Image (tube, rainbow, N blue to C red; front, side, top):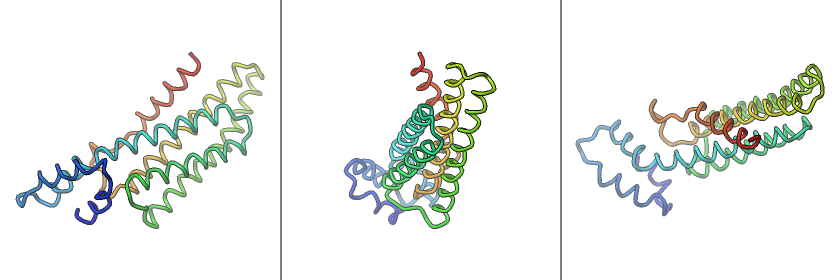
Length: 192
C-alpha cells in the first residue's frame, strides 16, 4: 500500500482521503483489510472520476458515430475517443498499464474499430432494406452510435481495471449496464 500511496501523495484532491486512511489503519488489520480500507478511503473517489470519464467519452463516441455518415470517419472518431479515454484514466490512476494490460486494451480498441466499420455497413444495408427514408436512416445511425458508445464503455471499464493499482472487489466493479443507460438516456434527450 505504501508503494501505491506514493502515486497519490502529490495530489491535493486526495490528501484528506489519504490522511483518513492512515488514521483508520492499525496493526490489527490484515493485509486484505488494509487494501479494502485503501480502496474505500482513497480509490473510491478516483473510481468515480474514472467512471465519469468513461461515461462521457462513451456518450461522445455515440453522438459522433451517430452523426457521421462516413465509415472511415467513424473509425477515426472511435480511435480518437478511445485513446483519449485510456490516457485520461491512466493519468487519473497515476500508473501506466503493464505490457499485458496494454495488450488487452489494444485488442479492445481494435475490436471497437472493427465494430465501427461493420456497423457502418450494416447501417447502410438496413437503410437500403427499409428504404432510404429519413426515419430508417436515423434509426440505423442511432443504433450504430449506441453500439460504438457501448464498446467504448467496455474499453473504458477494461482501462479502469488495468490501470487501477488494486483490483476491484465484486461490489466495486463498474457495470457496463449503467453506462449503457446513460448513453441511451442522453440519445433519448437528443431526440426529445
